[in-house]
Length: 558
Image (cartoon, rainbow, N blue to C red; front, top):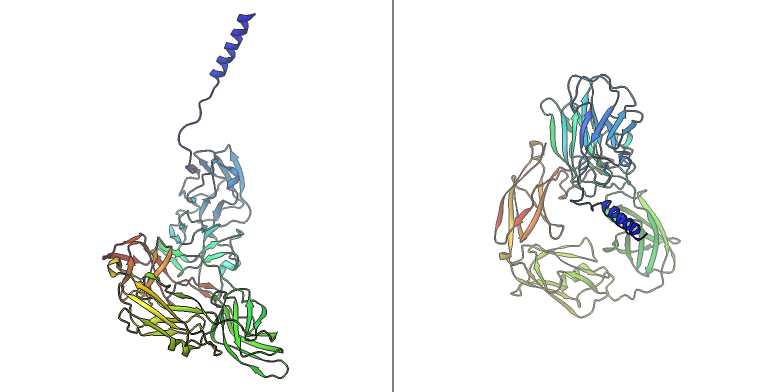
């Protein structure tokens, strides 16, 4: 019995070895699925009947990812009927008959994945026609906002003006998805004039929902005809429109001289804004010495008044709007409060300032500012402030009093290169708006400007079409390392030069300033305004110290 048992053990060991499977090898599959065959063939013409549309892939796909990722253009009423042949072939049956002389486009969206989760890098487009030819119109461009979730490019034909805004009422007949870089290409379009928008369509209904969706408004309508079948460089950036007026929340009395009006969002004062307060019983006015949004909490409107009594007051406020210009629901907001008996015991002081003491590499065009905890008497600040150069010579400049809590002093000319400056704040002369002193001390801060030898500059040209040449064109420079805008200059006669840039890499963006407010505006839907045209220079720009980077050419489309 020993030998048979040993033989059995040997047999079992041999079987275990024989059925071992070698571990998988090779690189991980990171390639997206590819369409290798279609029915009908791409760009087929003269199709009168179509029993189905078929797509074959080079590998097994995740069927669940096809939901809401297959579209036919122009849109059809009803739903596509799906039929799978294995895991690589999809058949679609159309819900209605084909129209004559019509180019159709079937799109497979970028949400489609293989079994390993690899998604299509760009939409797959299949075109065919029931007529003798295929429409060849193309509109291409890019969305410069990331991330762009649920992002679509919608095109509405027959644009004749803003009297009827189609993106509120109906889904666009033509649409596509941008790729992962934001680039898009609307192909196979008929001749005509189109309104093209970019839409972060949160609920997928193909319509623009303000406050919910982000929208990219185009800089102009796009016209395709026999002489121009392709329009490129249609660029968008997304905005979220705030269509609601600022909502008033409550009144808060802080002390005998400070009342806060609190809103749900940040506010600003329009030209002609004002406030009036009076005793609700006698009608005696309560003087308002100063009112403005809080510099750090812009949803709080600060009202500095003459000393209040413990009485009921009623007030009226007008000319207040939110950050995008939505005004109050009524022209005038009425509010009421009970006067505070708490004295204002806050000691006046300076809470922060710029440049900070000891700062280096300060811009030659910097503004000096400081923030007080109580509004300042403007005359006392002028008497107690000095900016001195290295030779103790007073630097002349102009004051910006848009905020009495945070005034700004801008030197009249550029500061000197690689120079030390001193800021003197003689607090013995500083007074609040109600006459209180800041103390008898002197604040002295020093800072040093850039050494010119450490800086470089960018020089180039901007080309715009004739229809845009009557407007100013601004060129902005963005630091790649700091991820922020550093400067903007106006191009003169098609030329620009951006000075005083530290060694590093930068991106350039130019925009046509149609409304002449020196900033890029993304347009609006109500009232309808086209966005201002803009373009990014396609490459990064390297700046070296003591060097002018030349030859930069920025060109606008259309």
